[in-house]
Image (tube, rainbow, N blue to C red; front, side):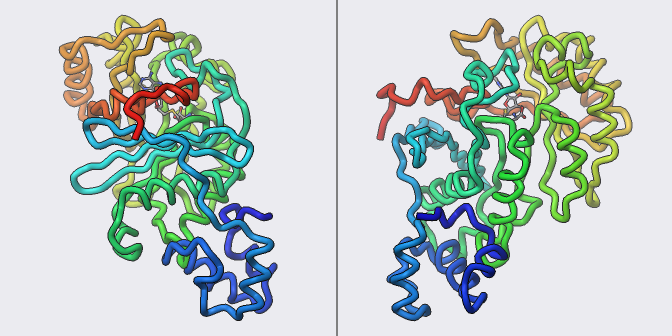
Length: 349
Ligand code: SAH
């Protein structure tokens, strides 16, 4: 069986005769939420039968769902080979956010990140990323599919380094963006990277480009080398040069994520170093006080230290926001995804 969600509409149009069948099926699956070809009565009966023998259009099952007291939900989605993809749904007042994973594990080994401790098991396929969005969408947004279209953003900030799985990620974005599918605008998708340099340059030349977020967490090469080993291959200067060349639309900005680690990245001097780095870049900074975990050798700074850091950026005319900790009680917060929790019976619904 072929996994329908792995396929872009142009590819399907080449497989079907006449080609417009691809558009019909895309609309049925992505806009009408049909998960059985028999429901697609706009297709001839014999064609429906042959499709059912060849194509899998069922969403993968939710292995576990963890519900946080703040409304955040974490999903472990069971993939065909038994691996679990982690997805987080974060409800917000005006818009919801669906945070998806791009890999099982991660190869980059950032020292403050739990996924980084796992190493890389494998890349996710386009369909395995697309269906994370669909599972979270359908479990949380119950109004009619047409109305839910504009109700959420997607961030690639779950497990994995999206630019390490470049082709599959770009294909997933194309599928999500397709006008006859979910029709997600690229301006509502944010790709977050630890700084895989050649891939940022490749992304800059794509016909449609998502928002870019750079995980910095270290404002000198010395510090960043220590915290994010990828920096030993591509220095901060090289990274920021690529960001400066990255095409931005009117009023669009690059987001910098900066994890605050007590005594490591949270001093006023660190803040001033960051100010200097971001000079001339249309940037917005998200400060993320570390989400602590037993396995991590770092601590979260005090509230006062976080505020002091933020104030220095603001004093230098840099937009800086402190990221709230959503879903902490279910290990759904930034950098906490790690599949060893898969079988823990906490807050299971
Ligand atoms: N690999 C990509 C996307 C996944 S990580 C990237 O690095 O951007 C998503 C965000 O979580 C990154 O900004 C990362 O710095 C942050 N993060 C990782 N571990 C964290 C932790 N323990 N506490 C807070 N944020 C963390």
